[in-house]
Image (cartoon, rainbow, N blue to C red; front, top):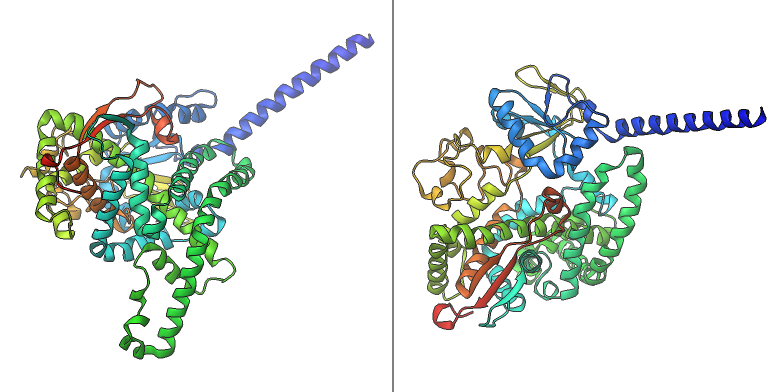
Length: 544
């Protein structure tokens, strides 16, 4: 009898344990996801009724995101209805029809905003950056305004970086595409961020690249854990990231400290002497290095940020700027380089790009200014076409910030906390928007027949500069929250490709076939293309 009671007790304990585990899993599922914020009248894509269906849909989205976006666009958006997608990174997306693009970009921050999304990203670097817009403001204003005066620095760093990383050998050699281009991009970017000396420090560039390689995947996987565990996980992740930020601190702290002191002295001089300081050129702010570091230090000093943590906040902002710049530019550059050397070769467009680059660099004696970059039309067309086809995520992502939510003209109510977007991937592949849309064809931007939209006063979208977005070209976003660094990226990549195709013969070796799909793109790991390169002979090249 005693043994029977013990068996019953064990059975009961087992049943209770199973029930407890199931309840925990159900609770975890609910706490983990935001699927319940999607209005019931919105149709889900790839979300069948199954146990833990949302989590399973999120897992599948690593591999079928493009197909899901296209299905949402064709089945719902083109009929004027919204659709819901489970996204591997972040909350579910409510994909709105293209007719709401103008509505999205016109809403005030109190209704729709990108800030809550950015804040989740910023928190992985430093808590003090949550809600901080300094990086975006400086990229949008100071960098854009000074870009023409920085062309010489960009060109100088491109030449030196190519010589150092790709080399000068006339013999064929094989190098990894993304790894090599990532280092080149990091050097060019940091030339404008922190100056010539430190951007050529191999240890510093290694730290800058490593920070992005660590943080970008973290922002993906942090969403896959239950919300109750996000706090503890965030602490662990930040501790890991401190290892990478330590490299930034080691290299940047002396420079930042010196720059802060110089800016403070300059500000005090200007304040004391007022207009009299204009008579002494040495006392003008222009005597400071004209770079990103100076601009963010000036903003920090003028805001009266605490002397106790101003240096760490400035360093963290440099880290954020690197995160925002290096990986996105590397992906664009790698995609375009692969497209031109494969698809562009078959179409004869690669020859046009090479001839154009050689002529422009030769005419300016390899010392281009802003107007010379504007002459690189074929290169810009190739970049724009690759960007159009490179978009794989929803575009114009916003979060509803109004406590009362937002209501669309068709009556659909979007609750506070919901995230909305448009199907940029599908819009860029719609034959009604871009004729023969899935075909790589840079020459389409030279055609008089092109899509038009209200945002550009019916100017053909294909005739707009790459840096200017439209309702049919959303690679850089649109409106006041469009990519703040798009003008710099445009000039940087155009000039970089001009030097590449002038100085090197280039072939692409495809990576091994992989079924990992979006997973490798999100984690920055996995097989990558390789390049076969060799330096052109001086007879066929502009002298470096």
